[in-house]
Image (cartoon, rainbow, N blue to C red):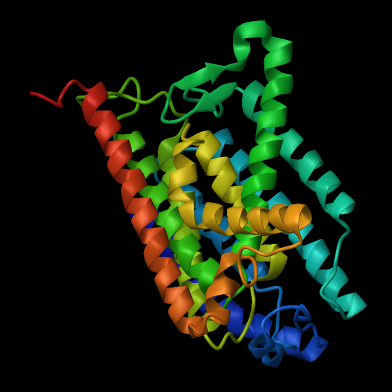
Length: 368
C-alpha cells in the first residue's frame, strides 16, 4: 500500500509542477496547436494553445511507477516485473510516435502531422515488439504476461494455440496490432474538447486499477478464498493504472476549459496504448470494450459518419466525432465534457459490476 501511495504522489507532483513548466517552454518555442478548419468555429480561438502536454503525462506515469519500484526494491529487494516494463513500453512507444506526429504539426504549422501510412508503420512496429516479448519473456511469477487468445475476463474464450505455437504467435501479433490501433485512435478521437480525454482517462484507468488490485488479492497460488487469477504481477499493473489516473487528474487542472495546454497525440496515443496493454496484461480485452465505452462511442460515431457519407452523401451526425455533434446542437463545451465524463463513469461501473459478478459466479458464491 505504501508503494502505491508513493507512486500516486510522485505522479501527481510531477504533473502539477511539470505542466506549468512545459507550458512556459512551449510558449517560448511557439509550439502551439493548429485547429482543424472544418471543426466548430468556436474552437478557432484555441489556435496557438500550447500542445505536447502528453510529455508530462508520460513521464509522470513512468516516474511514479519508478519511485514505487525503487521503494519496493530498497525495502524488500523486489525487482521490477517484466509485465510492468512491457506495459510501460507499449505506453511510451506510442507516446513517442505521438510526439513525432505533434512535432511535425508544429513544424509544418498545420493540423496534419505524420501521414496515415507513417503512423500505421510506427504502430505496427511497436505493437509487434510488445506482442512478441509479452509471449516469450518468462516472468518471475511464472504466470503469463499475455495469453495467446481473446479473453473477456481471465481465461481465453478463443485460444490461438489451436494451430501450434508459431501460428499462435502470428495470430496474437495481429490481435495486439488491432487492439493498439483501435484504442490509440479511439482515445485520439476523444481528445477533441478541453479536458474530455484527460477526465475520461482518469476514470477508465481508475477502473483498471481496481481490477488489477482485485486480481492481486486473488492471485493464483495465494491464500485468499474464491476464484484466483493467473495474471502476472497484477500489483505492478495496479500501480501503473493508478499512476495513470492520477497523472490525468493532475493534468486536468491545466487542461480543463479553457485549456492552458493540450495533451496532443503525445498524450492520447500513449494513453490509448496503455489502455490496450493493460487490457491484455489483466486478461480483460473484451471487458475493456465496456470499460472504455466512451472511447468506443467516439470511434464508432466517426466510422458511422464516414461510412454513411460515402454510401449516401448524407450525414448521420452534424459533425463527428460525436462530441462535436452535441456542440452544434447548442450544448456548451463544458456541458458536453461533464456529461461525457458521467457516461464514461457509468461504463466503468458497469464493467466493474460485471467483473465482480464474474468472480462471485466462478467462486461458487452466487447462491451460497
